[in-house]
Length: 191
Image 1 (spheres, helix red, strand yellow):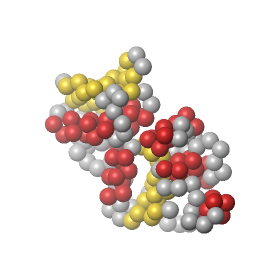
Image 2 (spheres, rainbow, N blue to C red):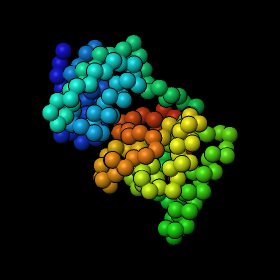
Image 3 (tube, rainbow, N blue to C red):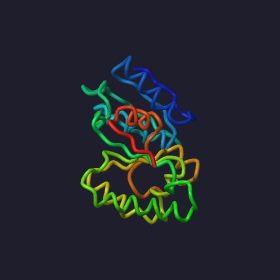
Image 4 (cartoon, rainbow, N blue to C red):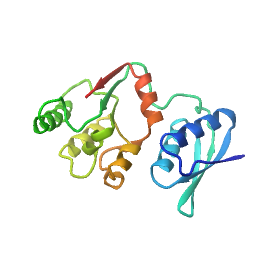
């Protein structure tokens, strides 16, 4: 079994490194920093049907990943007919900030009333402010999550804005998973 040191790597390098290693071998041991790197690699492996054993190692983690039968499959739910909403800002449109925030809030609340929900919503850049503590759309996002919409926030963006510990709706993701989701979806709606 090979040991891969992914400590001090910026997102999405740990996930990409593990992806490549799993393409060549059935079992890998990965050294990771705490937080988003561990969460992203663990979720990535589990979504591909791998068994993951996580062990605390000082300030970081050691993950032992055993490839599963589905390890070469795309992430669960990545189907060509899906709709994906890409939320790259905490406001909608280019007008005044206050109006843009009001429009975004109304859009997210209105999604609850539609019958054609997206498969997932990807939040990046200032869009992560909508999924974190203090957002006035948290309840709506949690309801959407309960209705089957996957709510994913960019871990690098959360770290950049120092919001990692304030995430309240959905889970973190990384750029590899965002790219795969966008490229495999049937329709991407960018807000």
